[in-house]
Length: 95
Image: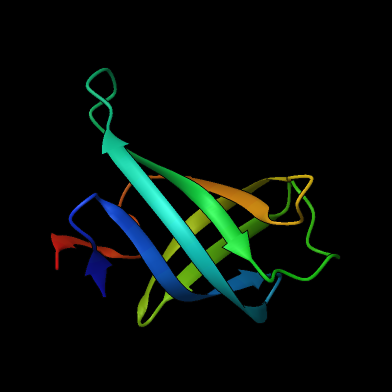
């Protein structure tokens, strides 16, 4: 799985919170921050259970790759905003 030509990953994933995994669809994008030299990525998780709330430590799995993710907030339309720093759980190579 990799990003499209616009640099956005859109696909199936799993959120792991306290050892419980739930399937979600994610739309993620990121950039290399020139100040800290790290890759920062963020986006939305669609279909995340309502009991998953901001502030809980979690991991995002896409296929066999995973990365720590921060559950930022649930936006008014119901999606869960997520963000991470470092290697994302998706391949950065364009399709």
